[in-house]
Image 1 (tube, rainbow, N blue to C red):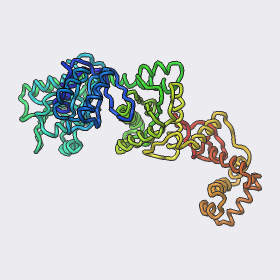
Image 2: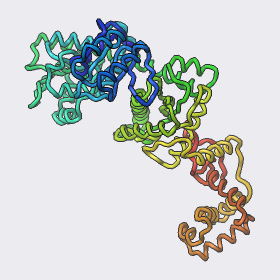
Image 3: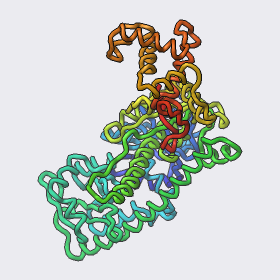
Image 4: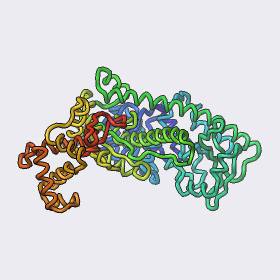
Length: 558
């Protein structure tokens, strides 16, 4: 993943980035984006571009340039500052590191997303600068004499041309956020413009009061709508330019199809490689190397959506099912992409991929898993409006051989959260350690097909044969720590009736409630064998085995 520094400046220079000082002609390659953290060890790959968040003052910048020069970095980005003095300019020439200024209107999150999106263009099979989407946008811009954007179906900006400064402030806002502002999306929907746009095969003119007029055309492959292309104009297009704009949309469609194919292949490859790393074994080290993944002091995060999208459009029974599966898979992938972007901004050697229905992330951290939980909580807070999910965090792994253990920890933590019916929660292995142990015990019971025994078995059989409720009575007693009045209230019977049932429990089962070991034994079996318990058995049937949850088995009653 690399692109030329000159290309970065051409695509982002007019709107987001400005050149403060260059060591010469911008001929180097940008290989990645790194975030500056003064409290963490600085590791920048050759050709890396460092986002100097909070870096100010020529002396501080000069010292940072010196360190970056030792790494062979491509450049340093700081918030826009006044023209540098001769000493700082000399430092840039000496180190060979470009000094770039970020416009005050842009956020660091925006520039990080823009740069990573630009660098990712090379991952989808595009090898020639002249054939990528940005170049197509520039070509259409020259053809129409107007700034152009290419957007997907969700109004996210995929590419844009030069001369965006000639458009209005709303276009600049769109470019900075790589997304059409929500208020305009709603306005266009209320106007019915999107419906007309996707039904038409010709460019449509849009004139909204207070903003520069636009002309837009749907980008389609056959009957499938892939996105749209927009140009900020002053008047409707002539017939010749309208035809050229429509022809350009066909070229854009080819690029989007090629990108989608390449992106799908890249996702599958990354998912396979990360799954190999998480499983451990002989090939884990090679897979980690291909991912350029850190393998020491890392935590594994397991994230899963808690609500899947449903289709209730009244279609025949077999139709919605196929639609639901595709829609759910798309939702999971978008969720995983968001997680990958979030952790990528924290560490350049982090990695995330969708494996089955779970999004896994391997996150390098200098401290313990508390930091990983904080990262997970921040992510859930950011995406909570769009994705309801839980995240489990495993113990730190000191080497690649321990990553599989951290993954098991994260999986069990996720299972505990699911059993609690939690949503929007992040927890570490330590937070749910005891419940996780119960899960492991339940898995062992299932694997060895161990039936209940002792006092629990006798009470369960009696309840099934006689329609009694001795097991719920015993469970209420144990949950109330032997408080008769509280336990009786929990099962809604009189305390004297409850005392009578306790005597019957002792007579039938032989259980000595004064014996701590006997209480522990029956409490564990209540956890494992009651409906919804660890083993998945129901009542007296004692049916041991996996549930219909293909990933993890039945959720425990913990």
